[in-house]
Image 1 (cartoon, rainbow, N blue to C red):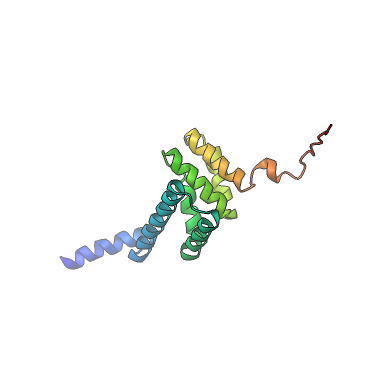
Image 2: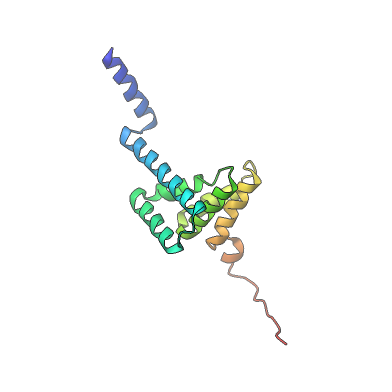
Length: 143
């Protein structure tokens, strides 16, 4: 009976290509992201200190850190989304741009989430207006 139970567990882990260490690491990643969101939305932490926390997260979790931060944008709480936009802007990870662009255009998502993704892109300078090389130069007359 014990062998059968172990075999079922092994089959389940092979089916999704995850093992216990990976699952624990992902849990830690989600926990770290949640902590940063709470910290960003509930206190007046200096930008430089928050940037250090973000870089520490990237060092510990790699590319998954920024990916999970983008996924976290899909929340109902406006204050949390605002904190996530700030975190994404501070992180300014170029690899998140395609995901954010996709979110901003996905009409299945609520308008508030699409707007948050667009704000993160604008904060990162990754909007069409910012990247367009043919920008018109605006001339102002001072009198």
